Image 1 (tube, rainbow, N blue to C red):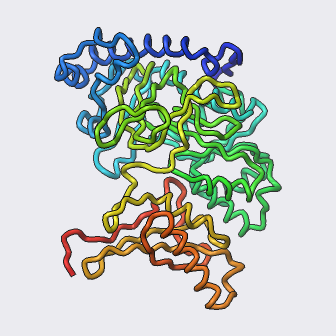
Image 2 (image 1 turned 180 degrees about the vertical axis):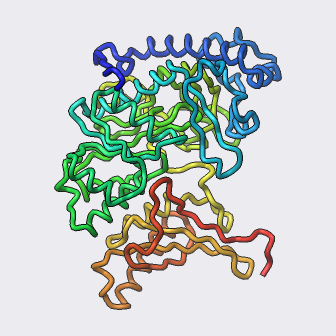
Length: 442
């Protein structure tokens, strides 16, 4: 087990005076740019295209001079082309599933892993977790960063870790009940699946010892948080991260649940206009761009996350000086276009969960009929409504239809289905099934 990391709350990086934090960020940014320039030919070539050298970074605002990085860069340099450390210093690699092409490979030095543990510990402490907690990690292990990231962070806190990984839902519930688990780490959609299964097993989730849920790896809404907390006794906490930067732990909510605090001493955030690339002022929504400030094995410079959010410097009630991001519920690449309108699945989720009787299980199906796009939303309804009259079910469909149209401006076909009808997910859930064939005319 890793040694427990102890922080003095007064001097911890979370509470640094802003001017001291900015000084630290600039120093680390300059070191990171120099390392990438000297050790990563790909990045050096990008800088030379702009007639830039590391000496051109004299203040934090100069970061805007640097080129962006995108996911394609990692695929083009597969597997180790962006590494800045020799392989004898790289002690671990993780990778994406590769479902959309070559996998994204990331590497870590021993110091990189220590930083990863540290930010997870700081996040867990911010919600009140201690070494007395029992943490069930139900993210996937292996090449995916979720499981091992949460695992080693919880161990570094001194907590007891139950490495359940994903799947085997009945066993997951048994472990939570029998081991007295106080914290669960998984995707929010999988935890809702656990709630459903516990009910079918006759287990009241409110009777368990669970106090905290650390949820991430997919966008989720405030309505989903309300549903989770209404059916359990936990605080549903949002954790944010991505493999390209470090994994889970780039940002995490504190106990006040007012948006994830970015651990800015290690990850520098920007918000840009996703179309123009221009940096946006504080408070405006745009695409989150992140730069690692300490990553040795694979420094990332101005990485475009495709996650849409906004930054705020407004002080949180916890007193941390770290900026917060608005909880991410949309991604620019999750968006689909129908009848000329940009739509995000979470907009439809918000509409559904505002209607009493619907469950947070839904599927969006896009079709093209007679050269027109159609939007169908299949949604499960509470089993208490199954025996109701056809007219009552029809009225519920109409209420949902109006709610969806009010939010996205498009009329949808609403199809109510019985509980447990739609496919469940033990990882990131796929909400949209696009059956449109752009080459077909009918």
